[in-house]
Length: 132
Image (cartoon, rainbow, N blue to C red; front, side):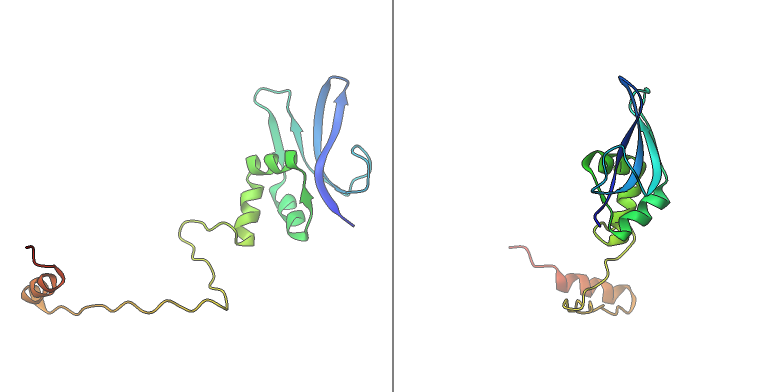
């Protein structure tokens, strides 16, 4: 069963509002759904986007595929970036990507031991190239 996260149209004629729902991909647009996880009102200024990010993240982890308009709404609410971070496709500041099994670890960096200011000046002089 292909589960989709998509928009269900609500409201009167010429006055649409939408619910963000999780539904079987074979069911009709405004038909049966599994769970409602949010709402979208494009007629307000600015548009109202209310999505339960925890429920959306849970369904995305289970493999539900969002439609293109819903993916944009998930990006606005922040659920899409949380899903990408949890999946490991986006690395945040301060986090290290987990090393894969096939990649060797980088060699350790050698550190110079310096005893006093005179030794430090000698070490700097050795690393600098003489100017011609």
